[in-house]
Image (tube, rainbow, N blue to C red; front, side):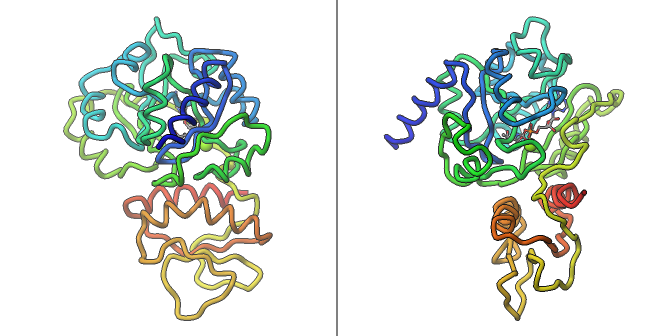
Length: 310
Ligand code: TXA
Ligand code: MG
C-alpha cells in the first residue's frame, strides 16, 4: 500500500513536469501525459512513433472534470451511469473553451474520453489538476502491453517511469462508441456490445442522423506480433506456435492455451501476453484456433484479424 502511494507521488511529479509515463488501466497500460500541455503530449507521439494525425483518448477522474472539456447530454449520462468507470470510450463534442491540446484531437472538434477503472490510476487522476491523454503504451502497430514488464519490453530505458499496477484485468482495449449524432460502436473492446446496443435502443438519440467518424488507429495493420498469423486453424505443424482455447488430449511444447476452462474473459486477458511470449520464443509463424464470436470473443476476433493482416 505504502509503496503504491509513494509510486503515485513519483508519477505525479513526472506528470507535473510535462513528462510522459506509463500508467496501468484495467484494459491495457497507457502512455500518459498532461492533455492540456502541448509539450507533454508531443512526447507521447515521439516515444510511440505515432502518426500525428491519429488522435488520443483522454482519461478523466470525474464527470465534473469532463464537463470542462466536453458537451454532455442525457444519453451520455445514461451511458456514464451504466458503464463508468470501465472499459468504454466515448467520442463527444469538444467545448470551444476546452484547454485540451490541439495535438490530442488532431485539430478536430471531437474528443475521445474515458474513465479507467483501476484503483491506482484513479487515485493518480484524483490528485492532478489535468486529464491524461493516453494511447496504449506500445510502439505504433505493435502489441499492447498488459504489465509493467511489457511496457519495458516496448520502450526500455527510453521511458522515464512506469507506474506498476499489476496485470491488466481485461487485457484488451476499451470499446469505443461515438455519441455525436446517432450512437455507433467504432471499436469493439472490453464492454459487451449487446449491453451497449440495448441501451442505445432505449435512447431517443437513436432517431438522430448517423455522423461518419473515422477511427484512424484501427485502419491499418495493428496489434501485430510481427510474424504471420493463420486464423481458424484446426491443425498445425511443429514449426508454428499453436494458440488454443479448447483442451486437447495430446500435448506439445508449441501449444499455447489462452484459457484453462474455455472461459473467454480469461482468453482475452491472456491474448496479448501469449502473442508477446510466442514472439520472444522466436517462432516464425502462428496458428490460432477458431474463437467463438460471442461476448468478449467478438473483440478477440477483431484483434486477431487485424494482427493477421500483412
Ligand atoms: O483501453 C484503451 O482504450 C487504451 C487505454 C490506455 O485507455 N487506450 C487505447 O488508445 O487503446 P489507442 O490510442 O491505442 O487507441 C485509441 C483509438 C485509436 O485508434 C484512435 O484513432 C481512436 O481511438 N481515437 C482517438 N480519438 C478519437 C476521436 N476523437 N474520434 C475517433 N477515434 C478516435
Ligand atoms: Mg493502441
